[in-house]
Image 1 (cartoon, each protein chain N blue to C red):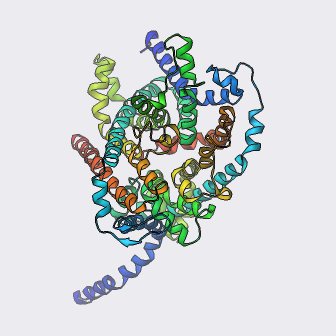
Image 2 (image 1 turned 30 degrees about the horizontal axis):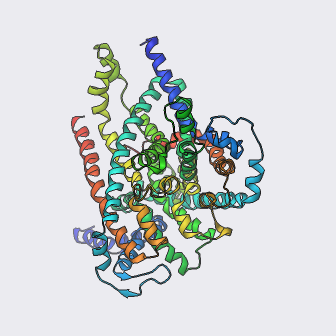
Image 3 (image 1 turned 45 degrees about the vertical axis):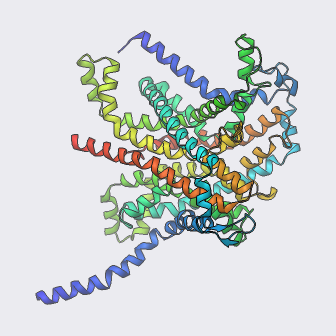
Length: 271
Length: 312
């Protein structure tokens, strides 16, 4: 058990794992302080750090606007996902609505690659006048993440003791009241994890946004940054700034919600 | 109450109650069903309609064209190659990432305390937008000023910079490495949860019996984990078929068409060439391929879960 060689090997493996997963982000940070000439040297650290890239990247692009669009769209979509998924998952898991076919259908709808939905949703949003609008993106993101939300929420709901719901029913509470007043507070960590993951999935989404939201006013961050490539930002340092600035909101969210995120992901979706 | 009366009331309740109750109960899932109809059912029907029509992006459904688009797609070597690439990539990357993820999960569970910190840390790649992941790796792999070329040349391993993203085999490897960076942590976390759910006494018994770590892994851990591993592999396979952003940012399908996946091929057909009828036909074929590759794994996951239940 207490084998020092084994322990050393494990710590070395852990250090290598950390190094590999930290490398791209740390290098991005390093490049963000490099001048164009410095970038070409191909060194890990900047030789003469410059802070010019940071203000310039925000000045020459609409970076702030894109980040706001992404933040608003992803938070609104996350709330929409929970509003639909919580009662539906409760209905399926506890009230057995839709027997086995509805859970099966919900999960299997996740299998189709997003490219499948691009053209049909493009024409749908166009016909209802929601193309190139944040409102359209919010609806689509809110709907698209429902299978994931069901997958994450179901194990939490299954763990709620039936006796608690029966007690609530004896007190005269209907199922909806039971869900909101009794069950939801009990599975709050699961709801938090699902909300966070839904928000992050929407914030990170690129393919649908690139097709459904092509104007500057409703452009999200991932699409904006992809357009900077070889367009407004010729310079790798500014590109790194734009990427990092876009990553910060998700990392802040992950930092504050890490307990819920780990719990949500390990709660046994795979069982 | 007579038997007939009971029968009648039962019959009455059967006739009225269930239907009324069913309609009210359905409200719980109605928004979900409506949303899934918009994201799944409607696209399916719409794609079939597009596929049998001559459609341009700005002007869909110009004329009925029967099976012309489907036939053209099935006879298009570029599209068939893209399909093959998507399937091969999904299976290969999922296998590699499952192996790496399981290794990291074993490390996490063995390290206990520092494992906790490591777990929180590896959440970050999973949270990083794939577009940014692509940009970060592009900066590392760039021929001019890329970190990897800088290191290789400083060490004297290469004389001229290597174009990692511009060389057929290396471009795939680059996409694969960025993908490993993004998704292996997710697999590791799921594997970790699966290991944590196993009864601890099995391992104590193995240790007492003097089993080596490899024997314990091979003879005890792997068979016990098989159902969960199959399910994790299935989930990863499904996600691997969705790959788009990394290809878009890193290689844009190149060099040539070497890293053009089915999704990327369809995207170019629809949003660069505007031939949405043909793109719809290609999408339908792609969906069938995803199903054909995924279904055996679904069967495997169910089969191993059943075999496990049978043993217990």
